[in-house]
Amino acid sequence: MSSWPRCAKVAFIGSHGIRKTTAVHGFANAMQRAGRAVEHGREVVRDNPLGINESATGESQLWVIVSQIRQELQLAKNAEVLVLDRGVMDNFAYYVRANGGEDPFDVRPLVKQWSLTYDMVVRLRPDIDLRDDGVRSTSDEFRTEIESILDRQLPELLDSRRLMEHDASSIDDRFDWWPLAEQLAGLMEQPLFADGVPRRRSRRVRTEKPDVPQLEMDM
Image 1: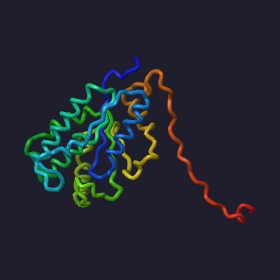
Image 2: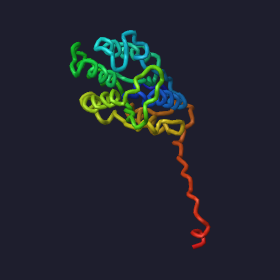
Image 3: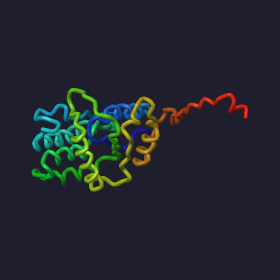
Image 4: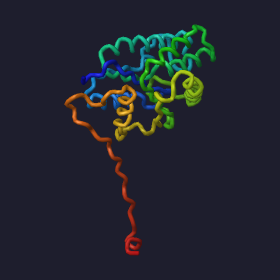
């Protein structure tokens, strides 16, 4: 059978300004080239009517978590692979920060259970500078707070087999998405390529040969 028996969910997570959206489109494109039916979920916080960034309230971040789950439920039924710009795990980190470390709405059990529905989670590490996009905060301190909460929370929400990590700086037009796609297929125990789709090879990274002075070559 060519189609995967159920939808695979992949979430790219982390703090803000770390090229998650670029990664989502790159990975989704690779899965489409493998012949898989793909949907991608956008970052729901951008539609939040209650406020975002450092001044977001607990209610605002609760809205984000609920909206994230709703989006996933809506999109998963139409795809073999659902690629997400955030998951409940990193949205929960913003929620915890907004509530001063507390969980006044007792959403942790839901977040923990929903975290089990992701087949692969890719955490992007913030090794690049924040850029002003007119929406998200440019505060390094705020981003560091979120990353610290993720460091504490993720081991309790995800098993290491499903968690991959990459530096944000590596996500550009040269990034080779095929190894990650093959990892997802392995986790799903399904072939990566649909019937009739030619197998692609991982892109080889070319290294520039250093210029060697003629005197050294002659030695």
